[in-house]
Image 1: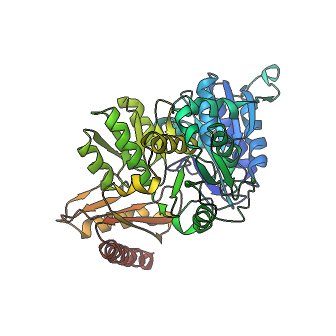
Image 2 (image 1 turned 60 degrees about the horizontal axis):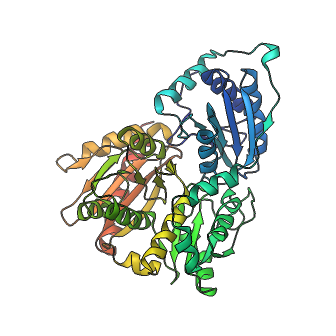
Length: 459
């Protein structure tokens, strides 16, 4: 078998019964079990239609190597990450494709610290998988699957330890929660009610076909949430992605906010209390994060795009806060991974302590306009396309931490980078006017499209 990369930016992803089959997933289980040397492993899943199938497949592979398996059933990704560390397991497996469409599924492999494995360990698993360096257990070492109950309440109780519950309860916030038919509906509504909130839910039943909206909480998918917030006169709305590690917020006026702005709000009040701290964020994040850090005596540490990279950098430099433009916030006093429910609690905490509406708090942040688009590009062409693009713009100062980010003197910028999970290039443009960001995306999307077409014609 020809070796190729199994792990993308965030775990292994693929189309069900095309890229990922039961046979493939079982073999992955054997490779992962070999890597963990027969340890104690938590296994959880999201609500996708294929997740039970893949849990059985990967569990079979893990057991064959002598691993002791604790099945925790349907859970958000941050809940199983917390449980791995809390219960001192050797590792964890989350069967999920996160924000991908319903025909996809995937595997996230979690280390004993609750963070997904660093790249060097992913390479070890890939080598075991492709070269079939499997370590099989003797027959008497093959165990049955155990079930571990109660991790959802353990997880939500842990979140409550990091906010002022008494002050939040006094405010009696009304929150509309939209889990998008994902597993966030198993935790967030209950957590918020325990915090004294009046909760209205939409799309809260777990349904792996995601009938109401895409599991990716983009602005265009959240009109229903915006309307619901205004209809019930709620103080806030929040939407989660498929496995509930990311959250996008709607203020009381129904305005939907990019993840950069709510992360910047958390960053502001964190730095006011902890000046001098490092803030870890990918190169795809807004310049707003740097502007807030400069104003409140913090320091931004830029990374490549990928939640694992942010988490690992936070652990390496002992940073307490990280975030992404897509709504992922990493609060290390709880855990150094992105966590949608924890982020929601932090936002409510800020609102309660400052006695301010969400729209008011966000309006005080510097204003940036953001435009995001995508362009299809075959996986095999991504490297050549990026190389040719960088070659074409010689003389312009760019940042190549991940893809190519061009910054301009008017505080506008554009990042062009290949997706780690899909056959596309992503464009992130920002600036002080809507006209400027639209113009940047149009200009550079045209440039990249010309390069892709040229390279395709050469094949």
